[in-house]
Length: 199
Image (tube, rainbow, N blue to C red; front, side, top):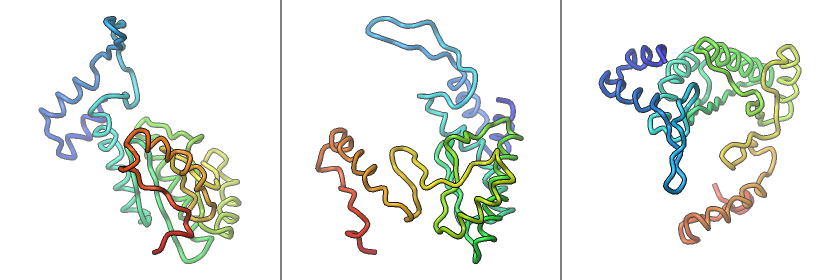
C-alpha cells in the first residue's frame, strides 16, 4: 500500500481524497443475508471486489508502467481495463513484429514484478494476425517458456479477440440473449456475422 500511496502522490492525486479512498479500500467488508451480518472480513491483497476505488487504484498502479512501456518501446496501442492490459505492436516484417512483442512482454513482466504484482499466465497470451508472424513468434518463445504463448484468441468479459483470423461469432451470439434479458430487446444491438457488416 505504501508504493501505491507514493505513486498516487507523485501523479498529483489529491492527498485528502487519497487518504479517504485508502480508508474505504482497507476497511472491513460485511456480508449480509436477510437480517444477518457475517463477521467483518479484512481485505489483505489485490483489487477488492465492490470497492468503488478499486478501478482508481488499478489505474494508479499501471499508469507509470504503461507510460514507461509506451515511451521506451512505442507500441501501436496500449489498452488497460481495471487490471487487464492489452498491447498492440506492428512492424514491417514478421521477425521484427515478433521481436517487438517479446520485448514488450519482457518489459511489462519486469515492471509488474518490480511493483510486487504477478501476471496471470493462464489468462495471458499473444494473438497474432498472420500465420508467418505466429510461426516466428512461437520459435522465439521457445527460449522463454515462462512467457505467455501464442493463442488463437483471447477471451475476456464474454467477448473474444482473434484479430480477424478466426470467426468467433458463435460465442458472441451465445451471450446476446443475456443482454436481451438484462436490458430488454429494444436496447440490445444484434451482433452480425462479419460478412454482413460494411466498412
